[in-house]
Image (cartoon, rainbow, N blue to C red; front, top):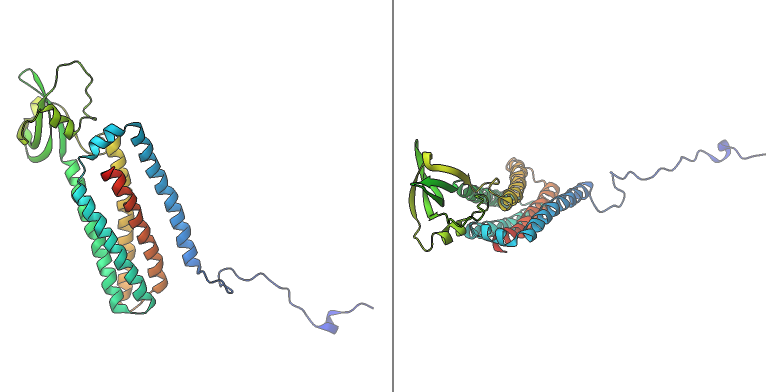
Length: 279
C-alpha cells in the first residue's frame, strides 16, 4: 500500500529566492542599475568621440587650424573645476556613509557650486563663438574678408575687432565656412588687429563661429553641448540630495549612486579637453 501525505505530513514546494529582496547578495539593486546606466552612457559617448576622431583624421589640418580659436585658458580652468568637484563629491559620499549631515551639506554645496561655475565658463565660451564673425564685403570694387568679435551693432551695420584682408585675385576657390581667424590674419600680412566698421550694404557673406560654420564647430558644439546637458542633470540630482540633507535626511546609497554618475561626467570631460583643445 502506497504511503500517503497524511502519514508523512505536507511538504511545501520550494521556490527560487526573490532576486529583489536579496538573500546574501551583497550588491544592492540600485548600484546594479546605476552601473548599467553608466555602461549605456559609455557606449553613447564612445560613438560621439569616435565620430569626431574620424572627421578629424579626414581633415587634420583644418581641424587643427580652427581649434586654435578655442580658449584653452578657460577650458583649463574648467578642467580644474571639475577635478575639484570630483574631490568634493567623494567627500560627500564619505560623509553620507558616516551620517555626518553637516559635512554632507557643505560638500554637496561645493560640488553644485563647481558645476554651476563650469556651466558659467562654458556659457562664456559659447557666447564668444556666437559673436565671432567672418564677413566678406565688396567695397570700392575690392573684396575684403574680416574676422573678429562683435563689439557694437547699429541699424546700418556693426563693428568688429579683429583682422581685415583683401581677398587675393588668384582665381582659387574660396569658402567662408573654412576660412579661419588664423587664415585671415595670414592674408592681412602682419597688419595689426583693430576695430572695423562694416556696413550692411557692403556685406555679401556673414557667418558666426556656431555649429553651422563647419564640421569642426559642429563636432565641438555637439560634444560639449551633450556633456553640458549631463552636467545640468547632475546639478538637478545634487540639488535634490542637498534639499533632503537640509531637511535632516541623509541618503547614503543615493549619494553614492549620484557620485558614480558625477565621476563619469568628469571623466568624459577629461577626454574632451585634450581632443578639442590640445591636439
